[in-house]
Amino acid sequence: MPIRPLVILPDAQLRLTSSPVGPVTDDVKALASDMLETMYDAPGIGLAAIQIGVPKRLVVVDLGKTPEEREPLVLLDPAVTWTSEETRVHEEGCLSIPEYYEEVTRPDRIRIRYRTLEGEEVEREADGLLATCIQHEIDHLDGILFIDHLSRLKRQRVQKKFEKAARREES
Image (tube, rainbow, N blue to C red; front, side, top):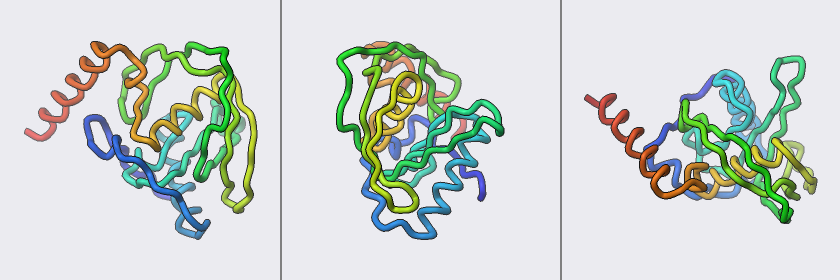
């Protein structure tokens, strides 16, 4: 269960649309395990496979703050099938956009459909922080970042900041 390096903005991989996972294989299970370890190490509450450079529709989520509270959720090929009209504002951050946080408005409640690592089809509802986190991670699967929900000016400032940092690292 190695910890994988994170893909950081402005890396173009973050804008890729991820492809379906396909059959649940040992490789898929190992990827999910690596993603959980990477997410816990970061630390974060959600991670999409593309954030470690794998363009597959796989997401892991865990809102537990301590190892004792952990309840990992692995979503294969997740899709939002319904959203509430009621919205919620939450301060979001992203492991691929380190140390940057902004308030984002999203639907407060959602219904999602996904497959588990056992191959079971699941449909469930989520609300509050779990709904926010799942929507954030599913966005990643479609090449959308949380900064895309901000004003154009804020988004451009963040992109320029990370582009400048990337150029410094290359030098």
